[in-house]
Length: 164
Length: 163
Image (tube, rainbow over all chains, first blue to last red; front, side):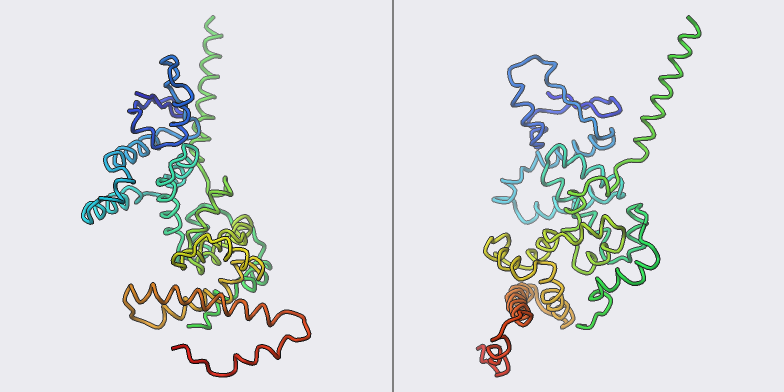
């Protein structure tokens, strides 16, 4: 059993086999093998407690269906089911997705990282620059002149649509 | 003693407040450029160009060639990450240019041309990349400042039997 401690000091107990899906945690465990029990506690300081919960849910779902086996012998039906489950898992607000990406990055969980990045990019697709700025809470610091001149001319091919 | 305890209490509360502050702010997309680039690399061409207008940082990230490389690679079957292709494209002006000049328009046309089956689409996408690369090389060739530039491209004026 491994204990993860989030930045707000909540503890999460996870089976080693499950937590091994994080390459970072796997390395840490490998480094500390054969040492005291206290060394099985891992601090995940840059994420709040909402995120480890989600990450562990994700781990458990994927632990039941390891990806290598999944690709080789998973039936079409099961693959569809996992896909649906992931769609539901990632169907959340952009702040949570951002936190998930950060957690997946620091814990090194490639499939979670890909899934969350994919979802964020889906959210940003087919929108205007203003909408994108609003969704991602980013202020547009371009001056009015820049917005009028430089930016459109640089990306003129998008607005022209001459190939349609 | 009482006063000391009070002081401690106050300090603790202050710490908690600070903790909550950082927690509330959460993680912003702009905090990590590498992660931002990963997200951008998953956008389509049009959305990527829109993203370039969101703010300065996004504009810089959207100009990175690796973002466009990922975009172009998604339209290739089997050729992704091939170092040969990469060096050719880099020599000819980069993936961003390739997409803007050739691949993007080609894909636009394909989506506009209407109903095609999935297998058709894959075939077309593959062809469209080969075609884009050819057009891209020709475009670069035309921009070359050399003596023998126009003459050798004349063969393009004649119809070619592709069958």
